[in-house]
Length: 285
Image (cartoon, rainbow, N blue to C red):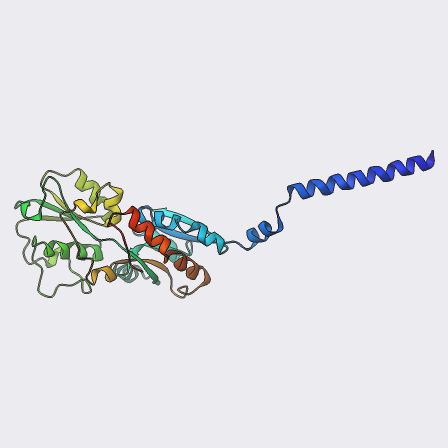
C-alpha cells in the first residue's frame, strides 16, 4: 500500500509539471517576437494632418521592419510642433519649410535644424466666383497668411500675377511684408493666421481672392488644379520652400533620424504622393 501511494504521488507530480510546462508554452510569445518587442524603439514625430501625417503613415511598416515604432502626433498649428520638439517631447517634426523654421528659431531662441527635404507644396491663388486674376475688381479683398515666410511667399505670388507691385529686388531670402507693397492696385490685402485663410475664404464675399498653403487648401477641399495661379515649381521656390524633416541640432544623423529619412525618401513614398495629391504635393527627393 505504501509503495502504491509513492507511485501515485510520483505520477501526480509528473502530470502537474507537464501541465504547468504546457500552459507556459501555450501563453509565451515566440522568442523572435519577444526579442523584437524588446528591441523596438519609438520614434515620435509631430506633423500636420495633411499631407504630412498621411505620408508618415505610409512608412510605419518599413520602420517597424527596422525595429522602430512610429508614433505620429498631429498638430493643427505652426507653433506647437516646434516647441514640443525643442522641449524633447518629439524626436522630429514634419510640417514646415526652412524659411519658416529659420524665422521661428530667430523669434523663439530655439535650435532646430533640417535633416532632409521631402516635398514641395505649391501655393495657390484662389478666387471666389472669378476664373482669372484679371477678373479681380478694384477694392476686392485678398486674404493671405500672416507669418513671415508665408506672407513673403504669398506677396511674391501676387506680384507674379500682376496684382501688386513690390520694390525692385524683392525676394524670398530677404522677405517682404504688406508694408513693403509699392502699389496694391486698389486691392484690400489682409493678413490672417495661416490655418484660418481657407476657412475665411470659404465664408468670403464673391470676388474675394486668397493665397492658401497647399496642405490647408487640400484639407479645405480645394483642388490646386482649379487655382487661378500657382507658384512656378521649376524655379528656386521648390528648394526654398521644400517641406522638411526637422530635428534638434545634433540629431541630424542620429539612428532614429537616419531611419526616418531613409523610410521617407523612397520610390514607394514618391508614388504615394503622385497618386494621391494631384499636383498639390510634389516629392523633391
